[in-house]
Length: 153
Ligand SMILES: Cc1cc2nc3c(=O)[nH]c(=O)nc-3n(C[C@H](O)[C@H](O)[C@H](O)COP(=O)(O)O)c2cc1C
Image (cartoon, rainbow, N blue to C red; front, side):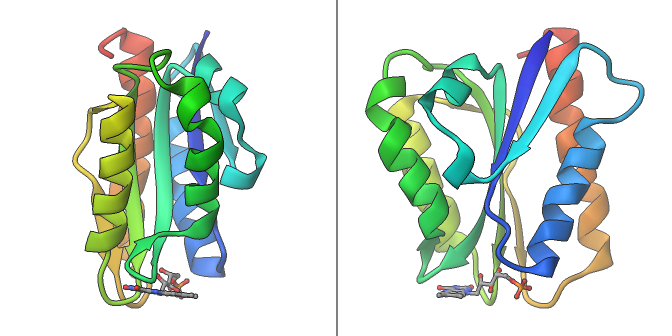
């Protein structure tokens, strides 16, 4: 069995919907052999990362950066995972109020240091919640799980 870890702090009803859409796609009935573990950054430690075969990161943009929950996660796992998770496939989704660029760049800098490998384009959503975001999010989750199942990553 492979493990797909989805790490995303969801501080609002809208962001909980985004997380759910990613997890629904990743848990698609056609995909077998992949354990999908959706958890808050606060509940995630280095062992979870070391045990994961791929990761989806989700964050809101706060103060032009990733949210504090995800930053706290990276601060705890960075050195325990450095040199042990090089090449780990990951994808990213960002929800901003007006922008999401700062959050995207801040995550990309840290995963660049860890040498994780982006296997999907980041999804960046801004402004009022749109139903049209749900399908691409679900597709993102499904593509990551299907890629693991097929041994593509
Ligand atoms: C403390 C705080 C700082 C924020 N800073 C930014 C920011 O710098 N840029 C931005 O686009 N949105 C910012 N936001 C808005 C959040 O990204 C937004 O609340 C989040 O995406 C959740 O969206 P929702 O209200 O649709 O659930 C901030 C929100 C909070 C609570």
